[in-house]
Length: 218
Image (cartoon, rainbow, N blue to C red; front, side, top):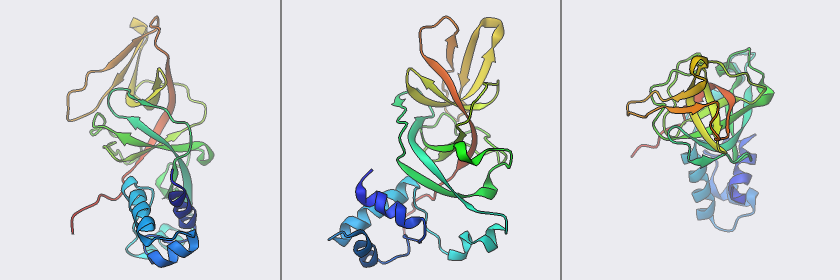
């Protein structure tokens, strides 16, 4: 991630950088051109790492509820909702700030991480308590604590080191597992037999989907 983007994310921990003047951001980041600041702020916005807040009160504890706080969840790159073709990065590329009230209380907050969704194969999924689909450009929240795979869980899988998002079906009778798409498109399942040489790991359970703001004209 570019150093200016890292600086903007750091400022965003305590400031609404989408509403700050470019001149103020440039001064605080020690950047000589306003256009550089604008470019990198726009890139973070497009990635969903910064969100525009029309009403600043929208993220106060008063409106979220007394017990609500903003979580800072690391983004560990992207994962395919389709063929497994993106290598798992494993390093933090940014942070999502979301209300603690959005997540089930039973989930440990300290082990959560996020991945950006690439592809359409889970755009009919029903993930988490709100039954959200995972569409291209969304962010999934996964529980990185020790995971025991269960049929019908939505999972982050590693297939030969490549990250993939699917619904897991464990077929003990045939000694295989299947990774199923739930999509408007026709994606065939990924089927892995116990004797296959492929390196497979159902790494984490997906517990929530974050819908970033979509850019519109005007």
